[in-house]
Image (cartoon, rainbow, N blue to C red; front, side, top):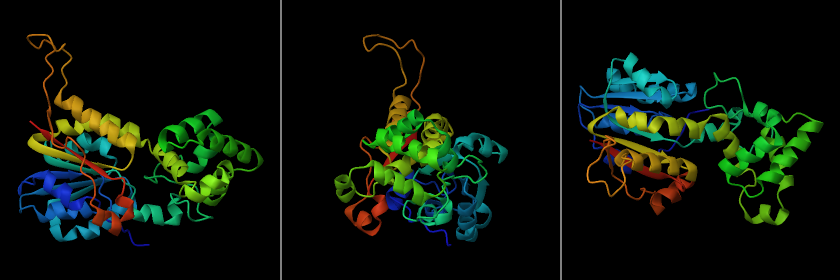
Length: 312
């Protein structure tokens, strides 16, 4: 299966980066190389692009797509939370721009063997972004307590039927281990009232999203990484983060805000005594969202939001 992914907010992201032709840029979620390809197209001979991804299929696809740029491109297999260490190994301590696209690729969603999709009945329950990880969605669904499942589905899926879904999962696995996406979808459907299933979109979408986020520690990684990535930027360098989930967007928004105003001194203090200096400024007071035309061409872009921060 060919690795396909339509990069969301591509034009807006490239414009926001303010690319320096001889600069060094990082795509921390390389995917199929869509954003990276456009960055490379703006680079001169001394410019450099480092692509990071934990998915081996994405790395193969991106390597092919970016091969025309030769040694201006370096690809590293890993998680963007390891960016500082990965760059240090490459002899790089500062960069001029960073891109993160936190969406799941179309390839990952559409390839049934990856277990992300709720539309194929006999796909294995997997959902690992990095196949080197041993713990899969199957293990999660069959070992988490009812309370843990409820927390995950409620917090990450924001599903009002989370409690009932968790209850049905635990009851079903007591009879037989849950092994496939189709089995899980059937259990979720049984936990949601029929009239809601008719009008509320696919009943399993929120639960599958929640399990994926929990399994891959997506929110923890984001929370622990954004400030560190800002500190990797040269003065005037920019970080562009595209989110697809309200919790992701809130994390990025809050860290940007704190990085712009890190001080803890009361507003009526005449002089700052905490010594905390701003790291930069928020470029996007409100997030940039896809145009109607983009959403029409790529419905998966609908929930995307781009936020940009500039280092000082």
